[in-house]
Length: 124
Image (cartoon, rainbow, N blue to C red; front, side, top):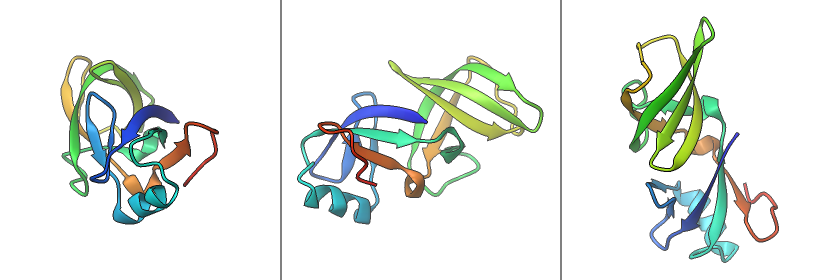
């Protein structure tokens, strides 16, 4: 699981400094009810829930630098960097992505996890 610390903004985003992700409206409502707006949260996303933005246009995309590609046959583990933030993603074998490429990635926000930074408990 990728864990990132970010600040929950009043306009429904998680701000990681290097980039921002828009939460789904129901997710944001839950976090507002828990009084987490303006606070630091821990955002979790599994590598298989990060997608090639060219193949999945369902969400906002973020540019990431591919640092390492681990070929495992039918899938590849990509080690990505967005500024100082490091992520791992699992992609299929297509399209061809190489180390040093800059690619667009999207996040399956339905599969996102948020944890209260103060007590470590899962919010969703």
